[in-house]
Length: 288
Image 1 (cartoon, rainbow, N blue to C red):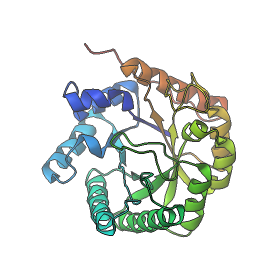
Image 2: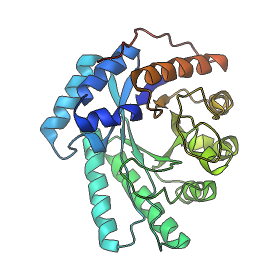
Image 3: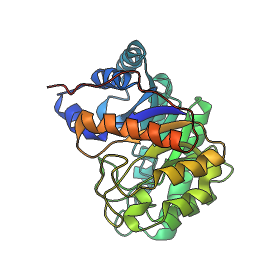
């Protein structure tokens, strides 16, 4: 497997300017990661010069930008707003291609008040399929996540309940859309992640290795210290033949220490289920 990280614990640093994405690429390299994920909230995805600089910074650090995380919102009640959203998502996919990222993360959309289930499901399926087809044409794989709430969102994900997520996966069968499976999000609503993963495992192309303190509430912790059954989930995928990207989603607020601990945990869990060891090639020292 290849290991990356979505550094949610550093998002505040990116917004404040305390750290930059090039800083993040160097941190990822020091951690011994193969890749570094980035969010469209932290760079100008319409600026080609900036995209080229970011791609070059990652290459100089010795890591690949593995995934571009978007917050696609295909459940907007207004049809014109949905058309604008799809155009923006297309531009974000173009940015992922320019960054040479193999994956782009898509989401169904927010649980906007007043949106009926049937309408939201239809709009989400249409938007996901169209965006995935556009991504495929640019050599990028679009991944649909079992998601909770985007950092830039007001409402939780429309397809957070497992029954909606599974229905959308079924509705998009045969399209270019694949799945990004998050190991913690289902637990927030008491949905069993093993049963959900078993239903979608053949379409999982990448993993968000995340953790929450306990079922029933979304309180992120350092991966490996909470309730998510990482070993059993990764074994389901490994038995399916999975050997792709695992992205440690570190959102505990513990900064670089949390990132390093999450990386060590991911490597240890992978080994515990018979995966090939990935030894840490460096260490990260907290920066003032």
